[in-house]
Amino acid sequence: MSELAPFKALVHQRCGLYLEGLAEARLFRAVASLQSSTGLTDNTQLLKKLTSDPALFDQFVSHLTVNETYFCREPDALNWLVSTYLPERLAAGQPPLSIFSAGCSSGEEPYSVAMMLFERFGERAKALFTLTGGDLDHQVLTKARQAVYGGMAFRALSPNFKARYFSPYQGRYKLHESLRQWVTFRPFNLLNADESSAGGPFDVILFRNVSIYFDQQTRRRIHQQLGQLLAPNGILLCGVTETLGNDLGVFELVEAQGVFYFRHAEQSTAVQAAPLQPPLPTRDTKADESIHVGERVNKKLALGSRADLAPEEPLEPAAANEQPDSITHQLHTAHQLLDQNAFNDAAALLEALLKQQPWLIDALVLAGLVARWQQQPNQAYDYFKRAIYVAPECWPAHFYLAELYRQGELTDEPLQRKQRYAAVVRLLTTAPTSNGGLDIIAPPLPPGDARFLAERYLKAANTTLASTSTTQGVG
Image (cartoon, rainbow, N blue to C red):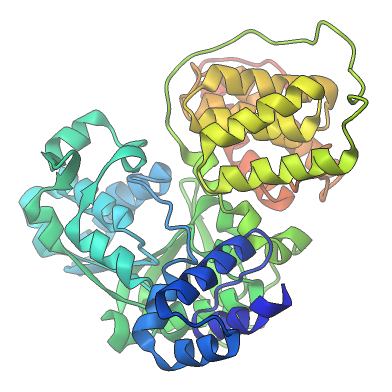
């Protein structure tokens, strides 16, 4: 959309946000909202006012980010941080330690850390640690300071934590005042991350599930800015699925107990390191399309299991009145609905499409992801198994089947989990950039990241099986 180009350029210049692909729909709505609120329909005049009015620009930006987060997201990394890394730092005699959540959205991440620290250290945690959250969006910072949440924000938080740290409030739940006051929130622009704007230096910076908004060049610039905020012996934690995309040579990548983090390189003048995997075209050209990936990888839903599903009839041809362009449009629409958390609408569209094309790989994978979000792991299992039956090379289906076991959404079967992760590694070792049999949509997880994660989780599965003397092979 050429008429949106000046708005894209302004936002990219000021905030670094990459507004291509599916993000254009949000940009279009944001511009329309701006036209309505200002009464300006001429984009030249609108852009001029937007450029000169900071409050209006803040309002505009609030429409451009998804701000989809929840408590205790990616718990493995947070558990390691609270149970291993921070106690080791305290043992070295360096309190208080400062923790900063960069791109904190509505506050679930820093509040999660606060709850976990309080669980481990009790009241003295407030003397041992300082907690700060920063975000570009002033409106979500207001929500973060209020600390009132409901619905999907609690989808990965244990009932015990919710009962201990939240009280009912106007049909929702409010965080206890002592924890709410412990966390400080302030406006923060990742492209201008100097110490005065955030209050550093920090011993820990959480930059998790944020970099999907930025292209590679902008991510490198952000790393350089965050480097100014990171204490000399501090660490930077990124989201699990973002590790490869953030290994840009600015920091040194380190692994401890299966958790990957970044720290200042020992030689600041070292030659810029190469990424662990070659850059993938979808990484930057369709950054927004992967926004839902981290959510799928880390959800904790109901338990259950199902037997393998095999088709009873051969593949059915497309309906006579169904044209390829129509199928493509429906799939992209379902994909967009999934990104917008319109799960019921996405499920209804995919159900109708699968009635016409019961073995359409792209639709089966999307339907499996939607079912996971709707807390229907058995149905998700069926969709992924059908996809593998039709296309054994469908590594996304293998990966998410393994995730159903690992995340406790189905009763864990270590051998099954191992076999699925092994299949992902084998398929992506043979064809590193494979689309997994998907013809229309991009793989929901970049191939390089999928292989990286599968290798990590396969190692853990091998350890589990070894401890129970299980020696079956993998397929």
